[in-house]
Length: 377
Image (cartoon, rainbow, N blue to C red):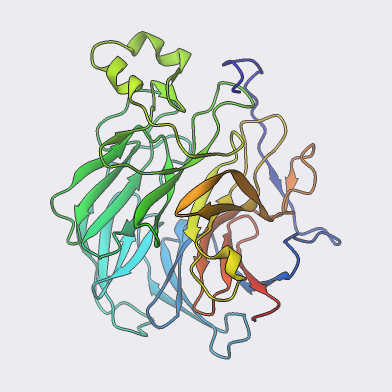
C-alpha cells in the first residue's frame, strides 16, 4: 500500500563520497566474487561490448569514449585507448550495422566502426537532434536496438520534476536505424534511464526514476515493460491512477482518459533509489538459474531521510515475466549504514563482458568492478 502524498516531509539528504573504508567489502551471494576491472575515470557511466570483446565506456563528464581491453584474460583491463573525444555528455551506446551509435545529451551520432578499432577514423555522423533543457541531472540519453537491428530506441527524461512536458520529453522514441522516421513509442515515463530488450521475449523494458517532493516513500522507482503507444502516468498520475496533487488541476479535457489507461509497472523499487543501468543476463559464466534474469544498478537517493539504493539488484524472471516481489540484493555494501550519509561507491551501468562476467561502472569511486562466479572464472 502506498502512503499518502506528503505523509512525510520531503527530505534533501545527499550522500557524501568517501574512500573505501579499511574493512568495507561488497556483499554478494555465495560463489560470487568481485574485483576491480579498471580505474581512473572522470565519470564512467554506460558501457557497450564491441563485437571483438572490447569494452567501450562513456566517460560522460570528460566527453570521451574510452576502450578497455583485457589482453591477458586475467579479469583486469590492461590496455586503454580513447576512441573519441569532444562529445557532449555521452551516455548510451550501441554497436549495430557496422557503426558505433552514441547518445550525447543533445544528439545521437554514429561512428563507422571496424572490428578491433580503438580510435575513430572520422568525425561522427549526426542522425538525431534531441531536446536539451534538463532538470536535476536529467541529461542522460540512452539507446538500444530492436533484436533485428532495424529500429533504434532513444530514452529522454523530463525537463522538470513534475510539470507538463513538451513532446519528446519523459518518453521513449523509436527511429529507423539511420535516425529517420522518428515517433514517440511510449510516454509518461518521468526519467527512463536503463533501456534493454529481454532477449527471450523480445520485449523492451526500462528503469524509471520517479518524481520527488511527495515524501520519503513516494514515488517508487520501477522496472516496466514498454508497450507501444503506452502511457505511464507522468506528470498527472503515478503507478496507474494515483493523482499527483500538484497536477490535479490539470486533469481535464483528454487527460482523464490518459490517466484511466495509465499502465501500472511490473516491478516497484524503493522510492528515490535512482534505478539506472539495466540488463538481462545472457552470459554463460553465472549459474543457470541466472539466465534471463534482470539486473538493475541503483545509483542511490538524495530525496529521502534515510539513504537507499547504492547497490545492484537482481529481478528473477520466469516464462519471460518478472516474478512478484522478486527483486533481491545482488551486490551491496557501498552504503554501509543507511543512517549515515557516507557512501564509497555509486553504481551506474551494467554490461555482460565477453567472458560472461558482470561489469559495473561506479561513478562515485570512478572505477569499473567485475563480478564473476567461482565455478567459471
